[in-house]
Structures are given as C-alpha cells and as structure tokens.
Length: 295
Length: 290
Image 1 (cartoon, rainbow over the protein chains, first blue to last red):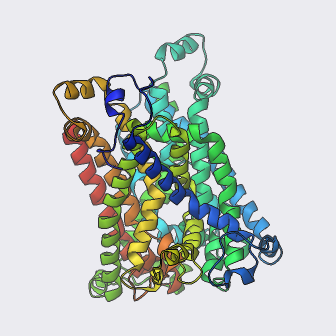
Image 2 (tube, each protein chain N blue to C red; image 1 turned 30 degrees about the vertical axis):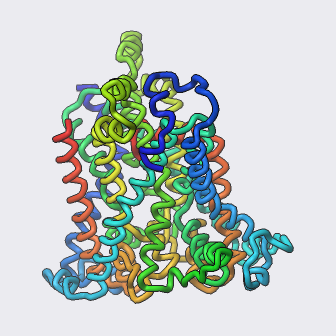
Image 3 (cartoon, rainbow over the protein chains, first blue to last red; image 1 turned 180 degrees about the vertical axis):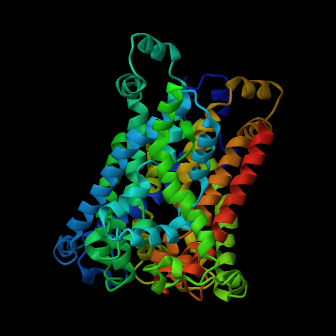
C-alpha cells in the first residue's frame, strides 16, 4: 500500500477520474485486495467482541477456541444488568456526556464567535490560551484538580465529573473557524436594525452555524463518553462509575477472566457510539478534515 | 467599548474553566511537586511540608520512573512513525488508487478512532490471549505456535504499539486525505508531462506539499502518545517486569494508589514539560513553513 501501487494516478491527474478506462488492472486488483484485508483487520476485533458477548462462559475454555458462538446466550448481558448494575453506569455516562455537550455548544461557540467577529483588546492572548489548552495534557492537572474537588466535597458527584469540561478549547477553535467565514454584512444589517450583540449571536449566528455545531456536538459527546482517566479518579464509589470506568475496573479486578461478560460490557460501551458514528459519519469526518483536530 | 465588554462576556465561561481547571492546577502541581503532599494533607492542603527538589532528585534515581520514561519514549518513537505511515498509505490508496467503496473504507478504517480505548483494550487483551485468543487461533491454522504476547517482556510493548497504530491510523488517514485534496491536479499533470513516474511525482509533488500536514500529525500524535495510559492500565498493569509502565500510569499509581501526591505532581510536571516542549517545537517549525 505505498505510492507505487496507485494505478489510477495518471487518470486522476488528468482530471478524468470518473471516466471508464477499460477493465480493472492487475495493480488495482492487488490494491482492492489489500484494502479489503485492511478493512477485515479493522472490523475483525469488533466482530470478535460482538460474537464473544453471546458465548457462554464454558465456550471460552474450549481448545481450540470457537469463532462463532455454538450455543448463543444472553446470559452475559443478564449478569451485567443484574449483578453489576450496568444500567446505572450507562445512565451516568449519558448524563455527563449530554450535559457536557449541551454546555459546549453554547459556551464554546460564544467565544468562537467573539474571536471571529468582535474586536476587543486581549483577543490575541485569549486565542493563545485556547490553542495552548488544546495541546496541554489533562493528566498534568489531575492531582491539583482532585485536591480542589475534595476541598469542595465534589468527589463522587455529577458536578465534580462535569465542571472541568463545560467549555473546551476544541469547540472554540472549531466554531471560530466557521464564524470567520460568515459575511460581516449580515451582522451589520442586524446591528443597523438595532439588534444587540447577544440577540445577533443567538438568533443569527447560532442558527447559521448548525452544521458545525452538529459536528461539535457529536465529537464532544464522543470525547466525553469515552473519557477515562478523569472519571477514574473522580468516581471512587461504584454508583458514580461511568461505563469506561466500570469496564476497566471489572476487567482488571475480580471479573478479569470472565471473557463473556467483559465482551458484553464492551459491546454496551461501543455499539451505541458506533451506530451513531456510522449514521452521522459525514459530519464527523468532515469536521475533522477541516480542523485537523479531534475532540 | 460596548463591543469590548460583550466580547469579554462571551469569553467568561471558557476563561473561568481555563483558570480553575487548567492554569491554576498547572501552577499548583508545580507547587505541590516541592512538597511531601499525601493522603493526610487532603483535609488541610496548606499544612503540607516543603521538601524542595527532593521529589525530583528521588525521581531521577527511581528505577521505576526511569523505566516509565524509557517505555513511553519507546512507544512514541516507534508508534508515531508507524501510525503515520499506515495512515498515509491508506490515504494515498483512497485518494487516487481506487474508484469504488471509498466511503466503506473511510468509515471502516475510522471505526476504532471513535471507540473507547478501554473497550478496545479489553477486546484486544482477549484477542491476544495465548490460548483462547483469535490471533493465536489464526496462527495455529498455519502451524505457528503463537506466543503469550502480553506476558512476554520483549513482546508486550510491541503488542501495545500495534494496537495503538491500529486504533489511530484512521484519524491520520482522514487528515492526510484532506491534505491530499488540496494538491492541485495540474501539478501531477505537469510532473507527468515532464516524464515523472508515480514514485517520482510522489517524491517531488505529494510529499513536499504534505509537509505541513505531516508535521501537524507528528505533533498531535506525539502529544497523544506521550500520555499513554489506558492500554497498559487495562492490558498489562504496567507489566511484565514494568516493561509497559508509562509516565501517566506511574503518576496515577503514585498519586491515587499510594497517595504520594507530591511525588505524583512532580511526575505530572515533568510530563507537562515534555508535552509543552513538543508543542513549542511544533509552533517554531510551522512558523518557518509559512
């Protein structure tokens, strides 16, 4: 899969990418084969996970192992729900991700708008803060934040899990890029009509930003849903676990050999998100391609 | 004047979050790193004892910390180029190699990127299981007796690197695809008129024009990989023989398992400096590009 196997390079270069140029060449067959092999490698582990979640415990001990479940069962899912309270973790993850997403849509786009469309002293400084926050590792702030949260008695609470993520730099950056392209005349017209800046932002700028807000919403939700290190330290008792924290805790603790149940737990963590991604993939990959950043 | 006030009002939520949860903690972690802050100090943080640079001195002679530095460097130095090469290869193939199934491949290769690393690590742990794992099962069909990947001191880190490259190549691919699409077709045309073959036009047209994209991806991936945590946490617990212990993981162990938060803050501060250096170097390089 290197530069040397690019059979249609010249066709594309000449701007005739879509035109039929006879049958497939041997090189393109090799390339399709490699790409499908790659696809199998990418999707295989997910298939293995889904199939494994329906296998009874005994089937994992069989040698050689089976690929398809021989006696499919929902037993693993039942144990997740009855013995481990996964509905609770699912609920916690949802509450946190939805709150964080909603807050970012408003707070991040407010600053993104100000940075793109309003003139103020200190703009360069604020922009530099946004960029540096994008780069800097959350892990470096973990210990003081934990001390702070324990002073405020917010460890093991929803506010403790949510507060640091309400206005992330990613959303500021993404929405700023969008608002930069918004024509000034549009805003001037509203100003002449006597609309205040807040009204202009909420009734003109925000609705126009719907596509970029969709991208931001999806990426923020994903980032929050998959976040691990922070909730790991902040949710110290099981009723506040998020799905990744619960899964990791059980996978490294008393259930570490329980293949079936851990696979089922992974399915619960992964499949809803993958479904949403596949349905909305256009928004996500385009958002990333335009900013080159992920949430 | 009014516009100024409104702009600052719009900036308030971000600036509050930045001050309380980013700038403040980074400064605080520097202060904490010169104390012996521990569990007993949680109730009265200001009562902790100043110990100067003792934590840093201790870190420099702590074999586990040195192992964590080495392992993280290993992960970054091998993992970043591998991820970028795989992502670039996929992007090139999708950009001009094929005409059908582009969306299928793009979505398929991107799937692991949107997936929780914890779930991926759990699944891969079973995938790499010596007796019941899919990988060794496939190896057995061609007569190879697969090793115990994650328990072997020489194979554990390469296994984790392979998994990280698998997870992140889709992201690299998408960014490269965007970069490739900005290269005007006329340039390839001109190159082919000049008699350049595919490799030559890749070398003299594609690569130079992708330089900013490559730089950007190198830095983003390096910063991400420097913070390696979930994979060893779930798959190996840092073992075998500390061969997969990372800087973040050691910080977590010291801070939240042994409750030596002063010591952990010193580790966090070193990690912060490493990431900051990478970020600053990037800005320099990108500026000299422009």
